[in-house]
Amino acid sequence: MAYKQEEIKPYTAEGEKGAQVEQMFDNIAHSYDLLNHCLSMGIDKRWRRAAINTLKPFAPKRMLDVATGTGDFAILAARMLNPDSLLGVDISEGMLDVGRKKVLQGGLANVVKFQKDDCMALSLDDDQFDAITVAYGVRNFPDLDKGLSEMRRVLKKNGRLVIIELTAPRRFPMRQLFWLYSHAFMPLVGWMISKDKRAYSYLPATMEAFPQGEEMQQILEKAGYRDVAFKRFTFGLSTMYTAKK
Image 1 (cartoon, rainbow, N blue to C red):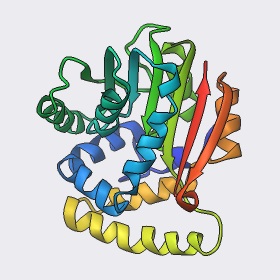
Image 2 (tube, one colour; image 1 turned 60 degrees about the vertical axis):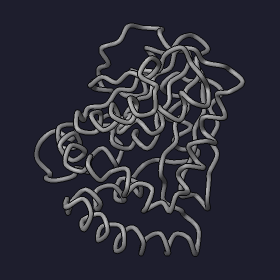
Image 3 (cartoon, rainbow, N blue to C red; image 1 turned 90 degrees about the horizontal axis):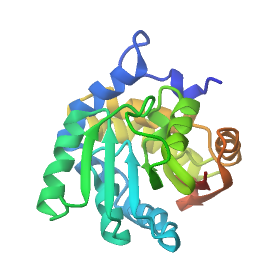
């Protein structure tokens, strides 16, 4: 099944979405962390901690962070959960290079590893991980169903999946305020700092198009996940999904 956000591409209507997303994140890797925390006014840090806290009762020892980007979520998960190993994968080598430097600076190189990989066809064996996390990455999947299926394939039986994703509020007045913020302020600030005019128009567009709430819950259940639940944060600006294989 095709979803609306899969049709949205960063640069041109032609060409494969995954390649354009890789190019986009390579272009903005140098300023991604600064913009990410600035544009969310730091609230994203609270959302990340809430997502990781859902895994504490399960004490995962082997973890996978998909669409890891510059590794912020992976590094925080390693510190909060103390797994034996945590692998972060992403299609952007530029983002991963930033993450590798942060891991070294944080003294976590013995736990956190990064590798370039495509979440549409992970180069990983079946049934490997106790927990898989995705922070703000699933809306960039060229094929959402395929990406969810791949993550389920490499997850152990009864392993946990946690997804946290930016979403567009649907109620007045946050819906109207978010529209102004995402269509005026975000593209302008994003362009001024990252120098990529299209990236920070593409990102809010995918937020608005991405299935959320009950719809995303049904998509996860269709992909074979069990005990699927979701929780909205900050008037619907972010939504967390939890599930198990």
